[in-house]
Image (cartoon, rainbow, N blue to C red; front, top):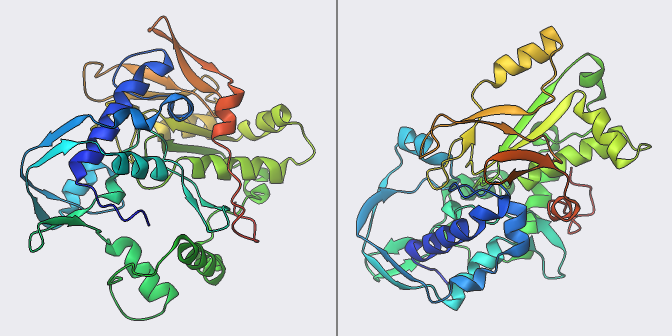
Length: 345
């Protein structure tokens, strides 16, 4: 839509500068943006304009819909060759990053979907190099394209050949069609969990805060849907207390999609099953947070607590982490998807 297809190195430079600038906002400089909400509220993406970038020629892989670097290596996607990339961050590159961090709107200005959090990478927006034209161009991954062709358009084609004439309104229409057509099989966001809760069920829900595929705000959106649907007559604080007695949401600082993040070596929870067993079978509720261990970098081996949403982490004196309530932060995670007439939970 912006008609700008940047070399990946330019977008990587924007991401790395964003991480460096927002890292200290959580009270601790450790290479991890634990407060992407503060990054969103305080970082000006235009400050990256003019910064020099340089990447050597390489042969790599691009799966699309990033599952973290470890999983991508295991899946072994086709390799691609990229030439050396040198230049400075352009105003168009910064505008593209800002659009991706703002989310999707239709032509009426109504919100269609949630954005990635500021400081996440742009793995799913990576361009590909066309050696015939010596230019960077759009890369349509089959992960998304095949769903449109086979399940929405209902034609036996493995991918979309182009996105010509596809607008934000088109995307909204595809999403609405799919939501209605496959609600019985793909609607995993039913907010009324009363039967599950009343039978003694517990939920530990966690999401990488720098997930570069599925926006972590979608988990916050669902969590708040469950809260408002199941406890409509309670105040916000009362409903949070009721919900957290059996369902807790944890945002993992710096983590990517279902994995640790090579760009931000932060903590990652590894003993969730043991925590769940203690909670369900022994009545030991994880009230102090969820344990997570840093697996790489200068803090490797450090065990950190993850705050249960809506509390957010903040480091005092660069050494002691507290879970605090921050209303502007909470507001930044809250979105109304008003492009659809049906409620989206």
